[in-house]
Image 1 (cartoon, rainbow, N blue to C red):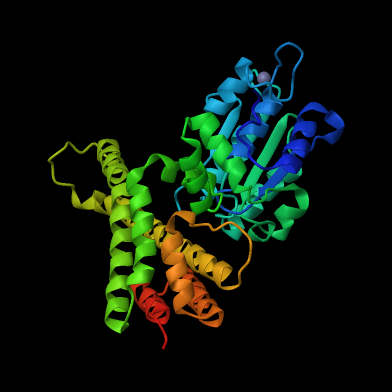
Image 2 (image 1 turned 60 degrees about the vertical axis):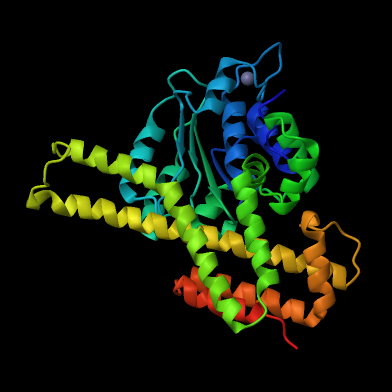
Length: 383
Ligand SMILES: [Zn+2]
């Protein structure tokens, strides 16, 4: 085994990173890992960090996966590793200043001090400029590993100072193999989940392990079949929004409560006490942050539903054009064929366009229900 085992379907990226970890001539101190969501950016970043820290087992270095440096880095407990992973919309300038202070310290026991920033695209320009200086002249043993969906998501000034490594969408079969090997999932379930998730590793794992998640996805695909007229379309849009809202609340409620309790404790307020007026703005600030996070989450869930729908119509188009490629939704073969028989390729493309437009509108902060109604109306059968 090695630290690279979980970095699926990325032979080129792994070769580059592995060489950098073992050959000083191939090493550089600022990296930018890019790849679409689910391609495994953060997994690759952690594997790279472990490879950099690896002290070797039986002469095998560069991420043996067995030495203490490797195992603690992968577990996130290595003292010379800092990982910034955020659910927040932005990484603040204060957080970046803290990081820069950390980056300036010599490693305590490791070979390097490694700073991984998982969402380097979530920084305001001013924050990025602060970071820029640190990346330009790092101390000799410090390595920055920035991750972003694409190189265009970070400022050119940052991009030009980092060595880029591009991750691709891994083949579904590779993702399925990982689920079987690492999570002990049944091979057939793993392959179905990997295809349905379109090789998004984290999603595939959730679909394979969580029957509720599979059901929710099935429900979304089912909606496409149920829309016969404008009335159904409006209902379907409402349903999609409600499902997303419920999922977002379920995912954030517990954490919101913990954060609130922590804030109250920090402010010296006992449970059950009323908050003195002068402290109310602090609570308001937290509640605003939490609301923003829930909104973002809801939009993410909605976007995923639309990617699922898109995959369904992509399959419909595959059938209509008689192409010989695997269906993403092989387990919904019947629905795919029924939709294919019921429409023309031109109509399918128009439907896919409508889904694309709805995704753009959501990204542009149009009210979700409005964006979705326009979409579902466009999905109904056209004479
Ligand atoms: Zn090792």
